[in-house]
Image (tube, rainbow, N blue to C red; front, side):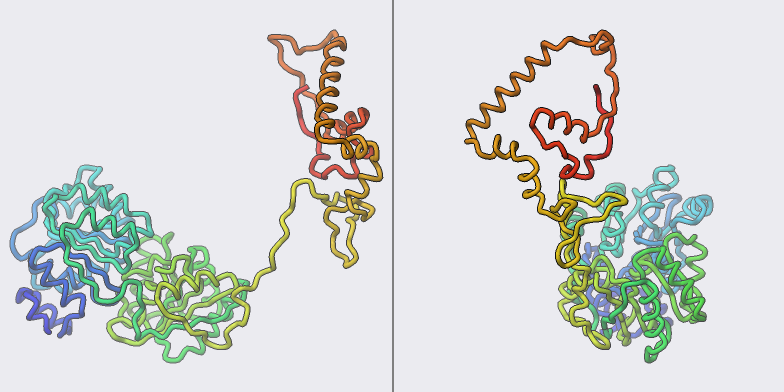
Length: 516
């Protein structure tokens, strides 16, 4: 099968030949004829399989007829990140060199004025991130009623970044009769719901099992220490010992970790640049250009660079952090081993990453081998289960020693002299045990009821102080009492032992403010 058999125009075929491509990839071979036939397409394929050309080439063929109108783009491509949007624009420039088409890029970090100027001239192809696109529509400078073809690329990444509500809004702004191309690497339930809602009888094109990894990538796990400086030391050793390392992308889970690792590698004389979401657009593009042109060897990045970046010849991928979501692992290591090339992906694993590694292996349907000596029990290592602190347990007070058991450990549930609390209480308050513990339950209830009635009667008979302020229309006085004082008052009525502080929980010894 060649590109000439897919129904593409002569101008497109000439541009493809000039780019050096002779045969289409499986996703291109299956998707392009359906796009040209004006069918909705649901494409499920891994990154690095040629998804971008699968919609760029037929779009160029279809756009050869007709022309754009001001502020009404003819086609719309949605991308999750600025880098992916800029990359698609480069593809249109490369494959559309024989076409006179206006291509506009709507992304953040660029002034609205320049983008408005391009929209006013008329746009054939509009490439945008969802947030900036909605900004332009709300400002009234963009109408989507003329969109004939809508492309939603990297839909699962859109889901991860929280763009699904924006996608739903945009799909309602474009005409119902438009053609929709939907590309994703995985099919979680939310993505399935979106496809059922906005695709009309789509042709499903699945070139490989969803969430699988290509066989040309050598994957491995490497044991790393718990501390960040230990992990950085392991990473530097792997980079120095890597065979055939031409360039590498190092992924971190957090932007802060990207900055820290970048500075560390610079201090150790590595050729490195950083890429994360807090960088301004010009800095991000400059870092990518340096890496693409092999001016630097290492790119430290957050997951903003994990999806769809077309850097064709990445030899190694290092996961400095195990990704939180198993899907991200597939997309991270997909930066290497592209277009049939071989690649290596190594993941640094600590004792706390066992569940994440298990989720990744379950998703990709294979076991990842350990490089070096696999830890015997290290994946499950922990400080051991901690006994929960129970309310009311004896806690040590400041400045005082704590009772210990025979093995030198703190004695839980013991008094200060080391005796079990229940024994001490029964010795110090025999009356309490005799009065309450040895009576039948019904007798205890009757005694409590009679005692409560008698106490209420005594309180009612007692004269009130002359300065009592608890009269209608006046506020209540605040008084500071401690639970210890309250317990001592109750002890005077034989309801608790006199030395209440010996067994009262420590947290009750603090004074509290109550209403008198």
